[in-house]
Image 1 (cartoon, helix red, strand yellow):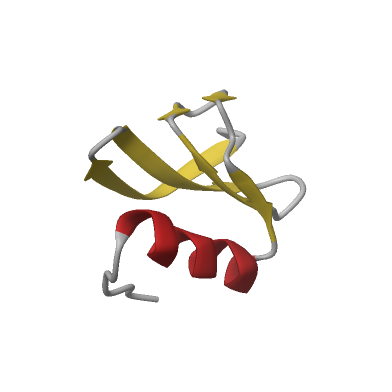
Image 2 (cartoon, rainbow, N blue to C red):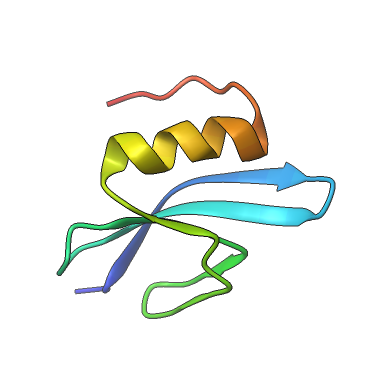
Amino acid sequence: MPAYEIKRSKETATGTRYLVRHWRSNKWIICSHASDNSIANPECEGQREYVLKNWKQICGKQSFHR
């Protein structure tokens, strides 16, 4: 089973950003690179609501489906 699940991706002026969930720790992360087993350059990490708030600031408003 992969350690990370990519939930969203968004092209920004400074490159692609990924919204990722880490399965083992249940943390959510915003980063500039993500694959099934690794991430790079994490910008923000924590609980879901905190990270989504920062996602909206970085990437703009976007609809999320549960």
